[in-house]
Length: 398
Image (cartoon, rainbow, N blue to C red; front, top):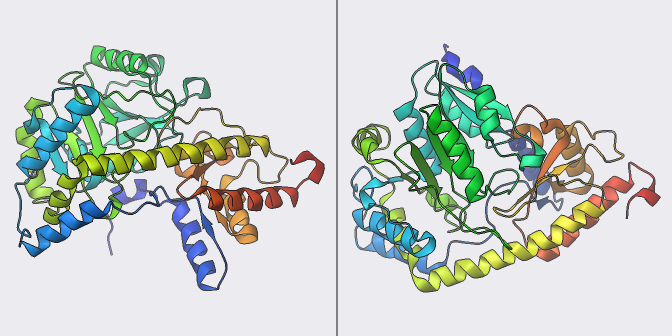
């Protein structure tokens, strides 16, 4: 049977093979620690669940407007004011089936076949696949450790082509957890604006920033900027599949038309549940969880460094550490997939190979997701230490 040519450009997640093996091992009775999947271990807050149940019981199961409930848009707009001191017209907010739905909308809105968009390498792999699905191309820009793997104005100048229409960046970033400063983001926007391009900013890990990192949003940078966010990470609503897009006014009508045709409407009970996410007591609970994520980061980062992993980009947000294995005395220090597979088989510890996030340096990077509590992280470090000791002189491993 015929399959569209665009499918050749869409790669599966390598980590899914690893996850499949991990689940098979668990069925065999083996104990597996999961530090590979980018999903908070915290359940959706009970008040949010209760609001979803109430919506179901009240018969709120019919279509909403294609771009979402007006009251949810208003709540998000108020959240931008409270958290960022930014005034956002609720009409600019498009509720979507997850942040993936927002990315699909923007890709469909702004790209023509054969056009290109600059993406970071490393970066979230689905971004280039959303473009491939509309017969456009993502140009992977090999970002540098000294820039915390963020796209720079110099790289925009170097990699911009005649058919390039814009760039997509993430802050905090997946897989690095690094954050663009306000100056970095403004300078990048200026360089893209000078090319008359469009800037897409992925802010789905906003809310999960630690230490001295100060959150700032690009929602009011200009009519050439789209901002993507989600209820999945900070709000712990991954399975509800709900996100949003903040778009310029000129794009609203076309996005409405696209949403009608691509999705018809976002999930109705999920939208009513999400309204409860902004209640003060829920925000307090989410902030307490953020503090727990910070504690995990502060535990895991020095432990990995003591074991010989290099962390070239300082993680200050999300829940990831992107670690360089090339300096380890290990036979697979330049093959992240083999490293991860063997670690899983020998020690029951699942982490993500860097090849899922890009082509340039992924073979000697791995990603750790600190999405479990500190006692479990302590077990993970113990297993990792044993694994490394089994492949090198024990005196070289603390």
